[in-house]
Structure formats: structure tokens, C-alpha cells
Length: 490
Image 1 (cartoon, rainbow, N blue to C red):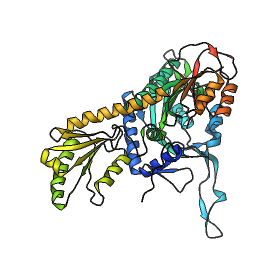
Image 2 (tube, helix red, strand yellow):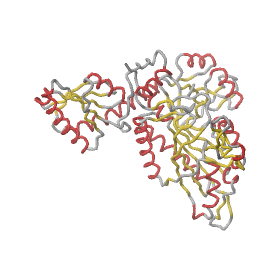
Image 3 (cartoon, rainbow, N blue to C red):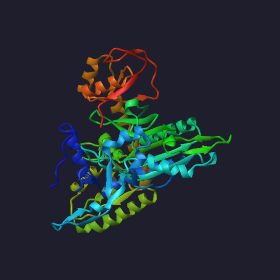
Image 4 (cartoon, rainbow, N blue to C red):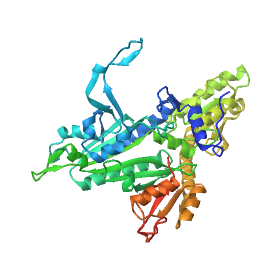
């Protein structure tokens, strides 16, 4: 018998791991810290990837691909950047193996590289080295490039999708003639991520800017979207960085302006990763399995026949095939369950585990009466529908489910938005279940680090719509002009 899923209230971390494994999203690999994304999990990632890719292209971006390996010397050109990634880099030092004396395989010591190669943790350095050749004039700008790739960041403590040594992502890298254009691009891509999270993932997010301590290494400003998981912890779902001219100066990327003067270009980078898969699981799912927003569900509708003897099999299969074709022709991702090795009850449980938004049960009585049983995964509500003109009813129901999943997550987020005006209240809120805590901070990295050391809570962002509000830092009592958003986080 398959392992049961640990209840969320018993052990949230174990519930998450159990669900990822049982639902067939991912598996552990033979390489420590790396994961295997299984077909069902990759099908969801493909939905995420394709939707985002379309949004990037709508905003004028094109895809390209850059090498996995980056010369070590590239990292030394931007000091802040190398400091931010130095402890996470995997390094290639040799290019050949040989037979060892004991009959095994060993690294050939004579095949050492003249210059070590860094396995891509992010691509700013190699891309900006390339942009030096691509950009000569203002006519070459803006340059709007995105890359879908894998990256490696050597992690000591890993968790499927949320933090792995190798993961998949997209990284946008753009070049602009002015700082204003680059900032506009940075904010525009933040809006793209916000819209994708809301409209596709049914995930309410808070848009904000990171503190200096939490910025991307080498950035002038880092914008982010932050969302809340069901255990009261925050998760950073996407970032967009205004890089200023730091990388342009490090790699001597200049252009001739309209006035004939040579100037350094202005840069941005932005990205989301397979961490979104973890957010999708933790924000919506329950103890019985995944709860997937219909727009990202690989299968939106499953049709399960309920046989009562071999005589009904043919009739139900014919009716199921007709309904399947009707729904598919209407653009619904549907499957008719042909598995004869399991009973209907098992199939019902499997459809819940997989998070299929709508389950249709078709029996002989339904054939006689022209009806079909419809069950929503998000609310478990059962209803009886007429088979006639089923497709428009199902499409309407899928949209209702998408909206309801978002509203449920939004209600949870709003119920877990708190304000703290003292250190005691801040600690009490964290210990009582966490969530986002809006509190005053004196603006210093020292206080920010001290709060993190004492409580494991970090400043997730300074919200973009933050009002100016005089107050006093919850820890030091020093004057503060605005509140920031704290949370414990993944």
C-alpha cells in the first residue's frame, strides 16, 4: 500500500515532501541535493513556462541561450556579485578521466584546465561579456533577451523544488540607453510576475523592494513578489533587478548615443524558477493531495466510468469517448479513464491526489437519464449536470474554480496580515503562527541582522504602496518613517 500523506497540522514539512512524492511531481536523485522532475510535475512546469514565455514575448522579449560554463575570471570583475555567489559555486577544474591503478576511474591530473570554469549560478557575467560585442550604438537598444535554462547553486540543506542544488528557471537580461528605461523595464517585469501569479497560479502576492541586505548581488535595487504559504511562512516567488551600470562598466559595454558620445548602458535582470512549483503545492493543497488552479492543471477534467458488469462497459466507454471529444473540442484538457485494474473509489482518490480540478463520474443511470455527476476538487461539492451542452458548463465551472482558489488564498493571506508596535507583540505574533508582520525598522543592516538572529524573521520587502508613517523601530526604538514587512520564510 502506498504511503499515506502526513497531515499538515501534524508535520507541515513532512506533509509537503509526502505530497510532492505521492502526487508524482518529483523524486530524489542519486546526486545529493538534486531532484528528478517526474512527467506529471514537468507537465505543470511546462504550463508555467509556456504561459510566462508568451507574456515575455508580448512585452517584446526574445529567447536566446548562453553557455552553462563561465570562466572564473568573469566573476572577479564585479566584486559584489562574486561575493554574493562565491560560497554556492560549483567549479570545473579538469577535462578528462583515466583508468586508475586500482581498476577504477580517476581524474587525470595532467588534464587540468588553464582556467577553472564556474557552473552557471546565474548568467550576468557571461551575458554582459557577450553584450559588449552586440551593442555598439543607440540603435542596438533596448536589447531584451530571456533565457530558459538550468542553474547550479551548491546548497547544503535542500528540499524538493524549494531549494535544490540544480534547478530550472528563466532569467531575463536587458540593456537600455537610460536609467529611466531600465527602471521602467524592472518594474514592468515585476508586473508581469504579479499578473502571472494572480491569473495563472491563483496566488495573491505583495509587490515590494528588498532592503540593501536582501538585494541581489550586484543590483542597485531588487523588486520582488512575496506570497504566504499555509504554515504562515513567506516565499519569494519572483525578483526583478535594476542593475544600474555595474555590469556594463565591469565588462566595458558602451554605446554611441544620438549625440555621438560614448556611454555605458543600463541593465536589468529578472527571473522565476521551479520554486514556483513549491509555492503552488504549499499555497493551495490539502491533506488529500494537490489542489491545482485549472489554468495550470495538465488534466482539467477526468471522466471516470462506473462499471457494473461487462455489459455496461461498452456503453459507458462510448458515452465517455463522446463527452471526452466534446470537451476536448472546446479546449478543455480532459482524459477518459480507461484503467480496468482499479475500482472507481481508487480512481476518485487518485484524481484528488493529482489535483484534477473536476471529476466526472459516469454510470448506467446517467446514460438512461442523460446526466453526469460532477465533483469540484477545490470545494468537494457534488452536483448533477445534464450531458447536453456539457462543455460550456464545464468551462464556466473551471473559471469559477480558478477564482475560488485565488479568493481562498487571498482570504488566508489577509487573515494573517498583522501589525506590531512593540518587540513583545512582534515575538508573540511570530510564535502564534507567523504570517506577514508590518512593523517599524530603523533602516540599519545591523538591526535587520539582529532581528533575524533572534527570531529567524527577515524583512521580506518594503511594499511598493507603503504609506509614509512616523514611528519607532520595534527593536531599537530609533525613529522610523515607514513600516516594512517581516516574516519567517523559505
